[in-house]
Length: 295
Ligand code: FE2
Image (cartoon, rainbow, N blue to C red; front, side, top):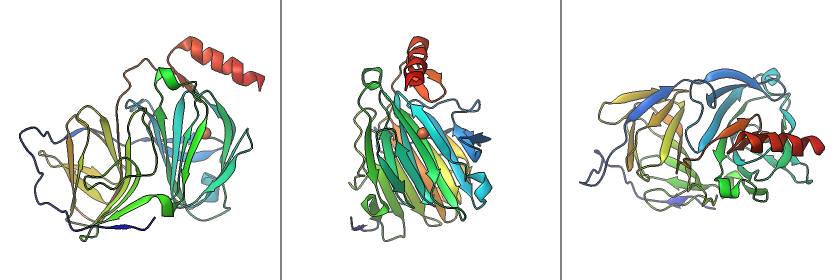
């Protein structure tokens, strides 16, 4: 879809009314260098001992390498049950193939939001032998009532991801949710009503976004540096900031900055994890291992 042409909405100060609470930085996470799949080097920012989850976000992996040996092994055939995987690429190409014959390539700026539901077996392999591969995989939990739903895909190429451009140079690529001025991402999700955006903010500019008060919200800085909140806390490149509760986020770019912004309603349910399965009880995890041993 064509980019929305919007007027400059930059505001010098947070538009804090009597009922608004601006979120502060609650915690900075640096992530853990990890290996997953067949030798893929990545930084696990959510889903490690540093930050095991941020309900409903179960995992957030960042991968960025020019070196084929860091990614070429990819993620050969493996199952998932009980949650959603969201793959968003900034550079490079990944081929996705599942046990039901579905196949496609995620390209730069494209996103795949896969609802694993009761189960899918898939592979995620780099569709390149050299060059930069750069992107993220986010895991979003499903509520107990929908963990065994039928698998489903929402896939959008870069030109279908909503692009909001402001006159001050800000660019917001909206995967899910709605910006303050009404641009809406293509992914639909009523389980946790997520916001998921890729924001490019020129030096000196401000980004403001309304969020539900009790949503869990994080920012991951891809490049540059942000200042946040009254304490003027700084979030540096490759850091993730977990935000406090509140109904407004307000970030100031200290330099040209690009960041991922995610927010969603917590499920507040028990979480039982077993490798590629995330259910509510240990018994359900044991059942998933049995079910996938048979296929
Ligand atoms: Fe996977």
